[in-house]
Amino acid sequence: MVTCDHQRAPEYFAEAILNPKEFLAKSCSDWDTYKDKKCENGQEIPLGDITAKITGNFYLETNKDKPYARKTDNGLGSKILNLLQQ
Image (tube, rainbow, N blue to C red; front, side, top):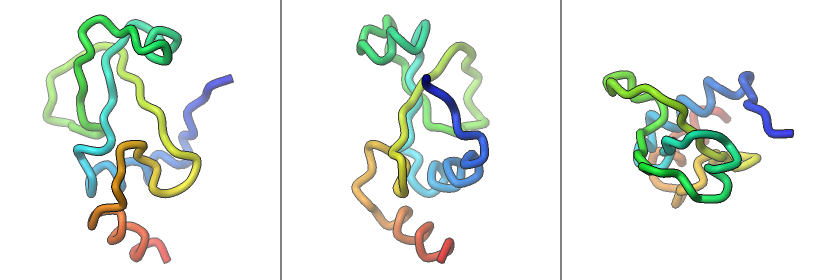
């Protein structure tokens, strides 16, 4: 079963703010289509972008542990976040 860990939401959001280009959600009709990489328009939006005027279903996967962003390169933002949480 796939679920969202709402207790980690503040950590995801903090990491997304520090690494906005690494925490991208993709527009897709449903989870299975997303997992099969068959999304029609494939529009991506950074997690937590409150300025975007976009609606729809957006999906992303996270790593089990920090850094949570799958596209991360352990950049400066991730390093700062790890230091702040120690």
